Image (tube, rainbow, N blue to C red):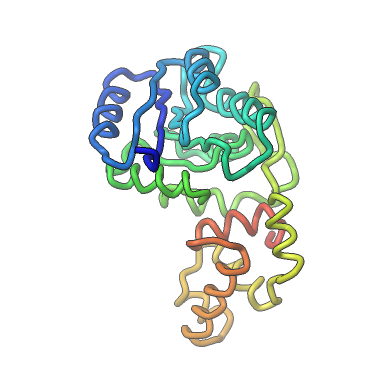
Length: 244
């Protein structure tokens, strides 16, 4: 079916790769298009048949790990098309939840980050949301990511030996949207607290406003940032330099 999401899997662990492959093939909304066991094979696969979403293990063996693979693939796709909506997405799948690995993955161009111990239903959600253009971040690392990125336009702190590149800023369309309809100061206050991990109820207490007012601000923020959820809004706000 044309509306299926094509997915490729780059994973070196045979049992993990086989299990995910079998589960994905059972999903009626997903078309499994290929697999690879290392970074070099993965680059060849992804460049030959770019999927809608590439699931990439960050700890691939050899010189081309998941971060380097992501960087190379994103550069390859960028050279082929400038249409952001049509570009394949990269979903990092890993057991590594340390700050350096997370920031390195996003700096390399990853769109989403999912832990391997996640329920399969959540992995499918991550694939669907990533394909739609959202940044899906596992809840166990979301706060790490959103509270540690100080300036999205500066180079991210990543492990030694990993190529350093800038975290992607907003595309021109999003920049224009924010110029025409910018966040108010109060909305900036709210998104700052969202980035810091505050719930709506905690934002009420921090800003001394009602829960209804907080919800209204959050709704306005999502609309102005063209996001469907708080996590995506926080990532976009960081990339746009709206928060510290």
